[in-house]
Image 1 (tube, one colour):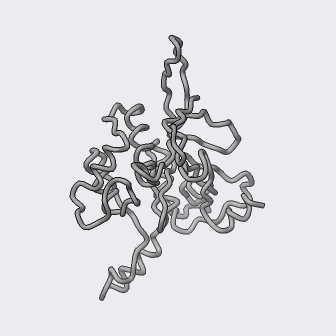
Image 2: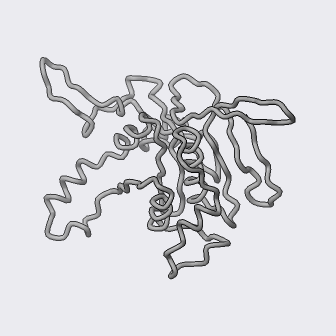
Image 3: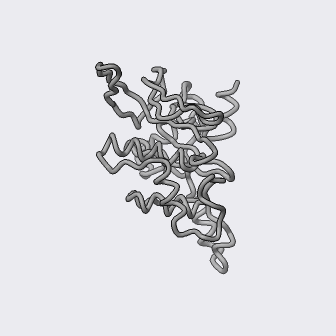
Length: 238
């Protein structure tokens, strides 16, 4: 692979592609191949694009969207978007927030605007909030029971479409998934059953075999792991 080192104090790692190390039960699904030209030689690399935030033009939100944009450009020939363009597309119509550069980060609404302006038209999904279901208690309970982020993310990742996960103050990019090393630890499916019981056979989604997602986290790791539950976090850390 290759790493572009930027002459910065914060965020030295620029445009980067590192080939992931093969490990059993790890599935790096959002891979691209790219030719790199150096001193007249062409080197073919395989991996998933990565970049580090610099706290000026790029924060975690812009870095994650750049990773997605770079991948979609090389994988599906969609337009390329540079970091400063992403920031501009995110802040163009938001005049009541902090200045665009230096960037103090982006809100979900700004990220949604940026991705729409980039031509991706994202689908936003979040845990149901009771305050959004006033006088609709039964509907709230139904949506809460059906809320299954692992199943949702798994479907897109299996289709080689990266996912952005926004936490309270951070954003990461999902680029693959890891399966349980021990099948005896696979939990009994609750919301992922897609068939009916027939002769003691129940059809379930293969998402239940996922114990962690593989992520690019611009502040800490490349090809890191995001456990799917507290239990799997204990197993992976143990």
